[in-house]
Image 1 (tube, rainbow, N blue to C red):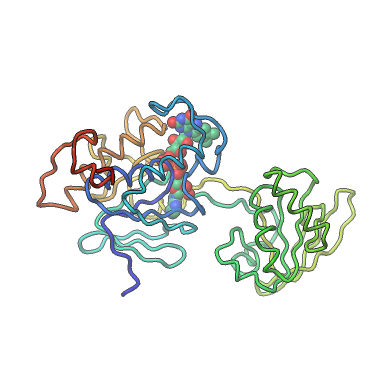
Image 2: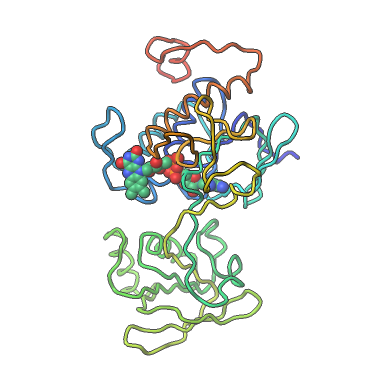
Length: 341
Ligand code: FAD
């Protein structure tokens, strides 16, 4: 169909290793699309430790997780890779001449090769321990916001006290019919500026802030109508609502990668150390997701793996072209691709 995105390579995962793979592939004229379930690039660096310093990236004595991500994005910019965030690759199948990948949002890709840079697996929202919550998920309970319009003129309850809870409180307030933020305590683990903005909205009567924890959900056929909330003093109250957005953080789960028929070793994908190819020809695995004798789960290892992977990918994408080894320092050809010449 016309909606299928055709490309040379699909990179699954926009962590540091997936990002640098865009660079190594780009130097060899291999076009890539990058898919990540997160809403932005950086993988573990951006999600788990954006402000922590990393000391072992060669030639950069100290860099935070977010800074490294930003620098990688700048470095790969010349190659114009297309990013697809908030989408999880669910299906991967072999077709004539390559592979077909389908995301949970229904996007379909056809590519000559697949590079799995899935790290510790897809980041998955933590589910609040509420009996029967599954029946509401995707209908009136959401763990992420894909389209703000879906919350237009609804009575929204946001649960949590981190950056996601605060950010979406601020963003959805103008859209929702009513918005209540619920958190178990009055301290927040979010940017102070967001907390100030939220409190100002409470002050002006545009949103409500309540203390407590949801203990029970009420509704039918996937549609929530309310929740029972236990306040810190032990009393309970009923909170009417149409939509609930719990933001309880994310965990990494291997997820769909396990369903693609690849050989696995303790949730890791074995590869050779020449091409970083999996048990399936044309499917590569680089970064934290792979395993081989001596493997170290370090960013610098993933960068190296990407460089070697790209050499083999070139053979699949350009079977008739001989690859000549070149330095970025001295090759005007490479410099043209980098936009510096
Ligand atoms: P990840 O960063 O894990 O990214 C993988 C991405 O793939 C994720 O965003 C995930 O959502 C996505 N994904 C997976 N499956 C799918 C799917 N089916 N569909 C869509 N998206 C999917 N390393 C160092 O070298 N030096 C350090 O100092 C260092 N400090 C660290 C400190 C902490 C606290 C932690 C947690 C890690 C640290 N690391 C460090 C390890 C480093 O972060 C990892 O080695 C690195 O992030 C691996 O990169 P990656 O791209 O392979 O995977």
